[in-house]
Structure formats: C-alpha cells, structure tokens
Length: 226
Image (cartoon, rainbow, N blue to C red):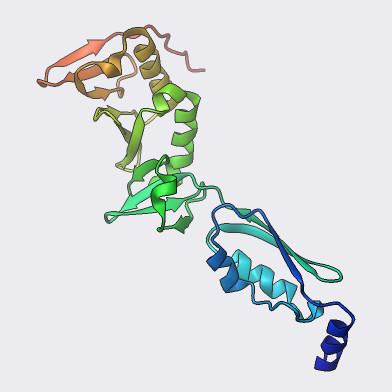
C-alpha cells in the first residue's frame, strides 16, 4: 500500500489510537514494547500483523499470539503465555522452565520462589511427572524444596527440614504415597532423621541422626502386577 493511501486512511480516522493486550501475566511491558513496533496515529493498515505476531511468538514467555485490527482505530493482541513449572538449577544458576523444558527467564526469580527446584542435566524433561506425583500428595509435596535427577533414572528429594528422600526407579508415585501414609500414621518425617530410603518396595529405611538405620513397616498392600 502506498504512502498516500495510508495518509488518506489516517485522515479518515483509520489510525492506531488504542492497543488492547490480553493474556499478559509474566511478560513485562518492556518485552512487549520491544516487539510491538507501532506508533500512535499511524495508519492501522500500515501495521504488519503477521510480522507482529511472529515477533511476539519469539519471546520466551509466549506460546502463541493473535494480532487483529479492530476497525477503525484499535489493535487487539492476545498472548497465551507458557506456564512456569519448576526452577532448574545448573552451574549455580536458576532458570524458570515450563513443562516442555523451555527456559522462560533467569531474572526476577523472587516471584517464583514457591516453585520446586530441580537439579540435573535432564531434570526438566522428567520434572512434569514428578510435579504431578507431588501434587497428588499435597501435604507431602509442600514439604519438598528441591529434587535431584540421579543417574538419569530416579529422583532424590530434599525436604525443607533437611531430610533427604531417595525414590526408586519405578513406581515413584506409590513410593511417595507410602511415605505420605507413614507420615499420617507416625509423623515419620517429623522425627530426628537425616534420610529416608524408599528404593525397597517392601520397607521404608530410615537413617537417624547418629547414622543408625531403622525400618518403619508401613501398612500398605503390594499391588499385584498383571
């Protein structure tokens, strides 16, 4: 379209007067401003909607975006943000990542302080399953501060009171449930223990402060595998 056309459209009232943005949660105004290259008063037909959408979707927080002209004078932008899942620790640095393992930000992490911290090269890949299992046992999950992906096969959990919990390679959800049941029955995690080993499906091994191992026989049934 020619410059004369855009000038005519501006004179007829088809110029950008409003920019309506929906869906912004964690995106900063500065991030949006850096990609929304539009001036108030310019012809609304001069704005390249496809380019603007592409620029928005290049931002780490944005999963998808929609950009529309609402004539005569409004540009409408809707962003669907990625959802932060965990904090990934690597090389002494924390990053917010989503369920697909995409790094969303390394900055202003205080607002994400309640997210689980995961450690390990492939930890983000396996974090969604762990988070789901912890959410299934919310009282126990609230005690977990961080988790380390061990040997590319299992997790060690670190509770807020300093207790280490070693999960098995398989049936991690069942192991977490056994420990949650033990807590409800005997307040196991509130005792003077340093580590709890759940790798044996038949027992819970507890390491006490002096280093002596005890067994807590939880009341559970072994599910018969078909």
